[in-house]
Image 1 (cartoon, rainbow, N blue to C red):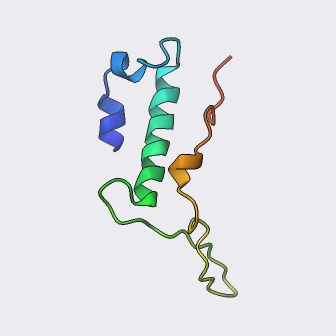
Image 2 (image 1 turned 90 degrees about the vertical axis):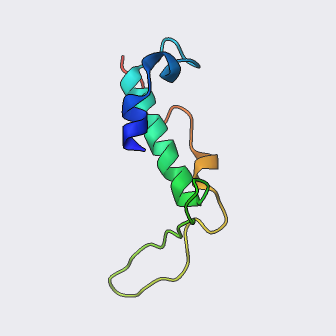
Length: 81
């Protein structure tokens, strides 16, 4: 994934946002792709994210009823001013 987002041509990267920041688009794309992989939608099995507590081993996944990439907020990385 890292190589994909690093090597994606700028014209393709900025196709939906011609005035966008290249670095921001690459980072947002990589983060979104990572969430897709965790959800199991990237030809990988899905992963359950279970918070770790040193006192007790929790068994409840924090992403059992939500696809993380589906709730990825637009504009999560603030634009440079």
